[in-house]
Length: 106
Image 1 (cartoon, rainbow, N blue to C red):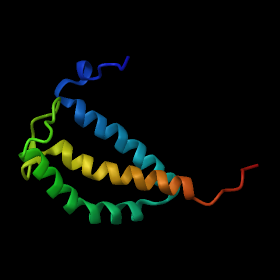
Image 2: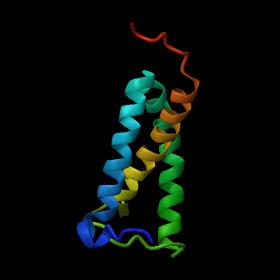
Image 3: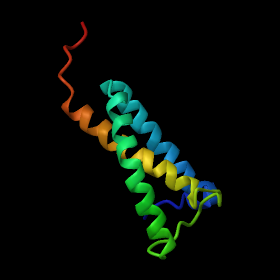
Image 4: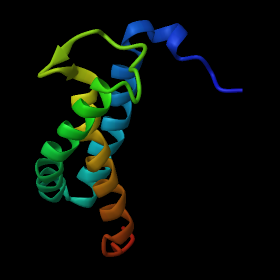
């Protein structure tokens, strides 16, 4: 059974999940020293993701529940965060997995 975090965070559930996963991405990017790569990836993907997200929301492909209700440029603010967090998390995991091994500290 999956815990119902929506009961805890209510309308801030989606925002809270983006902040939590964003924190994981930042920690891994810091560890892998890959902020620059993540920023380049996010900047490159963001326009495509925005158009895709705007379109799918407006034709009714999916509805965003448990959100703040704040829209920016026609889509929920949480979706903007999603479009930053997901590629940053992907880059952070990739860079962490492929980072050169570090010698153990003595």
